[in-house]
Image 1 (cartoon, one colour):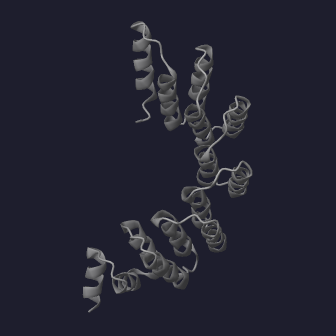
Image 2 (cartoon, one colour; image 1 turned 120 degrees about the horizontal axis):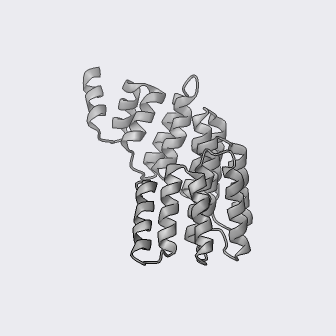
Image 3 (cartoon, one colour; image 1 turned 90 degrees about the vertical axis):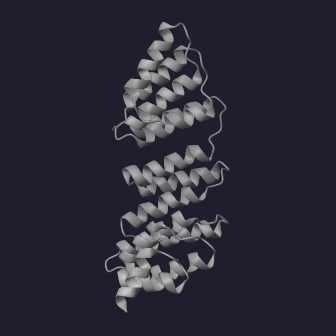
Length: 242
């Protein structure tokens, strides 16, 4: 889990010396280390070794391989992710929400290709796989990062209209869109924060920091405390104002 690929390979070599045959979990662990290291070549070699060992990958393993490829910076990474997805379907293993989530997030967060991320979300629906809050969140965050407030708001709205409840993470992502706009959209940010609190969602330090960027420290602290939120920094700001 630490991404120590060389360490994982040494452990696998020790298993072989001791005549312990690696199983799917062993190869999946190796693949996960390669994925965390961003080493597409190692990931491909591990997939080949899995095939040579006559071990049929499970959905969990395919999700790891697809996610690892999708997040790699290698030029051929996206093509490899597509190939493994096709291979999985040919094996009669249907992609699930994790499969599509890693593809949507990789396009939105890693490559910044929001159009492709939206296309994967559409394919997710076509495959009758229900999107989750984190699925929409990848698109909200992707647009927010570019300061595209209208698009971020639209995806947040689509999420709500689809019946998926936003968590504090998606609210923070939408707040970030308004904070990154130039000039910052303070009115909209205030409205989003009020709506979040009214729905019983607890704010976090990230919420306060993002709200401060959108409104400024003094206004953010005033709004924060006016809605019954407790935070030492906000209380200090209010005292300094007095």
